[in-house]
Image (cartoon, rainbow, N blue to C red; front, side, top):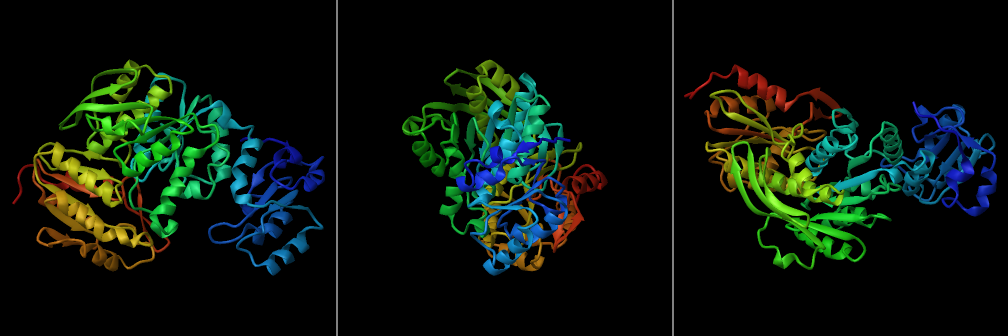
Length: 517
């Protein structure tokens, strides 16, 4: 367990008023905490406006546990009278310091506490609506294969590629980001790949991280329940590319927002653009260097690719399905070349990558339908998964999907339109309903279909998967979309054990081989 004793004036200089720094001298801090339940004697308690409540409300309990200092921000979200009352009650017991915009300073303060771990690591930040997890894990696999350990922070957990600790968040809070980077550095890593969510960027969770390279995958309509507008969502993503000291940006030029972003950030950072197009002459204004495909031929388990890069051209195969995974592979290839890989080493490592948990994960048995489990939960993601099924497999495409409750409702009918475009049979079912009625969610999805001839609604997700696997024939492909790596369904506030992959394996094993009537 890490334990640093750090001078308070060193931690806070430049973050609080100079007039307050004198009060900090001679005080050493054992740890930084923002959860009062974890507070210990000699800690610095951080009290700022969270998503639902203000940390200052819990400061008395932290003080009772012996914290040395309370660092607070009272500018937003807390009733001033209540805040003043709390401060009056604790200020004679501990040092209370005001820090404006504390939420956005936690990262840099924590970075100082943990001896600025990101400065001695090659840190690659990956953002975008879809593909963050895949790009991050393919990169980590490639970097691991040729160099000292590569750390990962993201949706599937934090740590190392074969030893991830789930957190439940794509981008954890600023304190945990810095603590994890310090632990990864101490374990001997040279590289870290970090998925960076729009929420994480908006809330300052990666402030204080010295990114070397920023990667942008794509932009689709998502998280509008949080950001309010597409412009706000885009602005949050853009922040990663204005990180002080950023060396390079790797950007998808086939994405409209990506092209605009590339032109804009090219003024202050070196841009590597990637594209699935053979002819990239119209993209010349958008990037300094280009990585693109001259030829891509699908086969049942992947693609034959011919690529052109500034460091070389050549042919190789990737064992990944879907055009979007070719785009993901190009993002990885460009980032490896930026990270000083030779072209030969980069394509050799890319040829050996394997799919990520719950991301186009194949489940197969002889003489039975193929099952593909994927996390796609946007219109664009669902469209891409359905398209790959029709591109790589000869039989009918069955699509089982739903939409999450308490999330952006506007995308529900759009998901229906995406499935309808490529799938031969569609079963709409329950995803994570949370606090909404599952039937109401299904009803909203159903409004997006132009015809219900090939659609049915089945409320129970296991039953929906059973119908698809039992009805599909050998050669057909059954897509189970939306939950991917998740191992539970969220109903209300309860997590009920449910894993699409486990359910699919059970039902596929129970199904008789061959053609069924």
